[in-house]
Length: 71
Image (tube, rainbow, N blue to C red; front, side):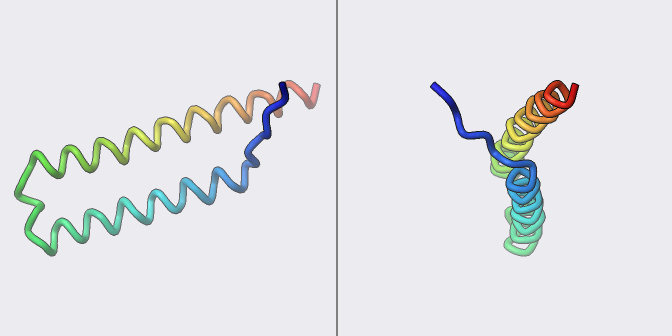
């Protein structure tokens, strides 16, 4: 079975979108005063960072496949 390959531009767009959401999330938490509730900040930020890890691994695997196909 063949899988559809996600393009690098799509992954870059997702990564930039996640950065924007993370920055907006930090600003929102600071303005609402939830910044001082450490548990919620940790839960939200760790979930966002785990998404970065998943996207990063996908990008590394995709780049490695592209490099191998060039040979």
